[in-house]
Image 1 (cartoon, rainbow, N blue to C red):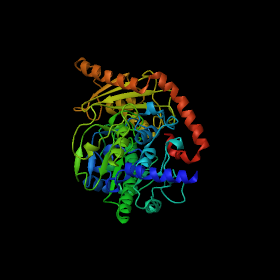
Image 2: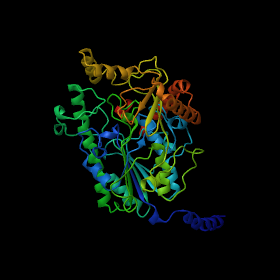
Image 3: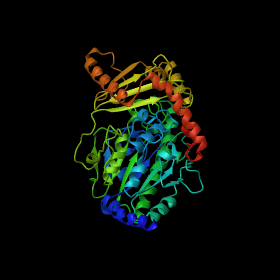
Image 4: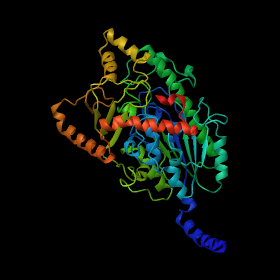
Length: 483
C-alpha cells in the first residue's frame, strides 16, 4: 500500500508543480496598512497638510499614486477584512467593528498558498476567526511585544528571518502598524508648531484643533519612518527589485468628518504601489478602486486566476490600472458605517453611501437619532461648540452636523470637494439623486443589506466576534481599537 501511495505522489507532484506560475513571474508582495490615516495627510497627495512623509513620497516617486481609491467602511475591522477577503462588509459578515467574517470565508493567505507563497502577518490583526486568515506566521511589530502592541518603533528582524526562511519561495508580508491611531502619543511633536499649521477646510480653527493636529502629524511622521524601515529591509535583503509593495492609509483619522463617517476624509484612501519594471515610476491614476479589489489584483499579479465576481467575491482586479493600461475601473464605489462596536456609540446608527467621480449620496438610516462616538463629547468638538456659541456660524454648523444629520445628503464633489454644502434639496439634482439611489439600492440588495434590520443584527455579529476573540487571544485588537 505504501508503495502505491508513493507512486501516486510521484505522479501527481509534477502536475501540481506545473500548475504553479514560473518563479520569475511571481513577485514577492508587501502590504503596509496604516491605522486611521486621512488620505490628504500623506504629503505627496497634495492635500492641505503639513505632515511630513518623506518615505511615502519616495515610494510614490518610484511607483504609482492611486488617487481614486476608497474604503467600503470607516472603522478598522470591516476595512481590513474587506482587503483580505475581497468581500464587502455586510456580505462577509464583518460589518460592525470587532466583528469576524462568516466561518468558511477564504482570504488572501488561502489563495496565495495555492500559488506557492508563504505569508506572514506582522502587527495589528483585527480580523477573524483565525481559521479564515491562515497566515503561515503571526509576528509582532517589535520582538517581545504582543502582536497588537505598538510603541511607535518597528523592528524588521522578524520579517528578515521570515524572508530568509522562505528561500526561493515567494513571500507575502502583510504589515499592519498601530500608527497613527489616537491618542497620538508617538513621534516628535516638537517638529510641528500648532500655531502655524494649515487646516483642512472642514475643520474648525481652535487651539484644541491645532494641538490635536500637531500630535497627529507627529505620529503620521512616525508611521512614515516605519515604511522607510520596511523599504530599507527589502533593499538589504536584495528583494526591492522583485517585490510589489502596496501602501494603504486604511480609513480616515479620528477628527470630525473623518473616521466613523462616509465623507471623503473618512473613506478616501491614500494608496501607493511600487513594482520595479512593471509600474511606471512617478505615475498617477484616478480610476475608482476599492479595498475589495486588492485581493484579485494581487492574485493576478502572482500569476493566479482570481475568484469570479460577483459569484465568489465582490472585488475585480485593477492590475491594468496599476500598469497604466487603463484609467477606468469602477463607475461607482460604495461605503457603509455601523455604529455598533464603537466607544460611546448608539444602539444603532447606520450610514450607507455611493459615490461616482462627481457626486456622492449618503443615506442616514436613523436621522432622528443622535450620532455619538468617542469624540462626540470630547474636548475637540467641545471647542467647536464654544466657538459657535460665541458667534462663529461655521463652527456652530460643523459641530451640529457631526451629531445630527439629515436622512439624505448629496454633495457635488466637483464644486464642493470637502462636502460642506448638502444639495439634496435642490430640485435641479433630482435626476442625480434618483440615479444614485438606484445604484445604492441595487448594491444593498446584492449584499443582503436590509438597512435598519441589518443594523440591528450587527449586535449579534459583534457579540459572536467578541466571544471568539476571548477564546483566541492572538486575534484580540489593541486597546485603542474599540474606537
